[in-house]
Amino acid sequence: MFSTEQLCPGEHSSGQRQQRRSVTKTGNPRLRWALCEAAWRLVRFQPDYRLCKKWREPILNPKTSPGRRKQLIVALARGFGVDWWRLCTGQTTAGKLGLVLAD
Image (cartoon, rainbow, N blue to C red; front, side, top):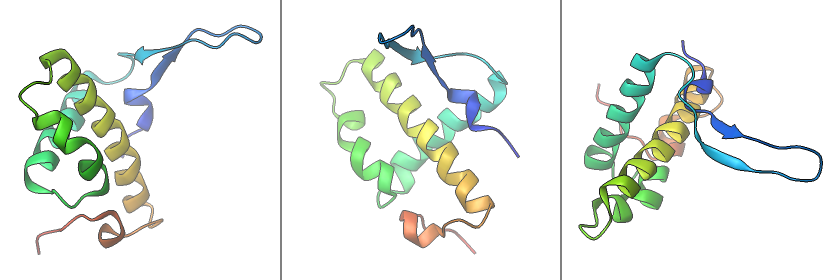
């Protein structure tokens, strides 16, 4: 099992001021890599997955810059990590998420 903290957002806040930063690189780099690779495959092979519906068009748009594309993939990977945890703990089903699982 893994922790969703592998793709956690950075934050630099004090008092009333809140400053959110990009995703930090804490945790296991192999897990971060695996989640990002899974995100690319989700975009390609699971178009009905709820997060792919949200991010697929801007990710595959040729006008999107490579840096922005990476940001979108990390966002999708982070969301997928949470959904995978929910699947593993029985809080949801693949069908509710729009995932098609092979037998």
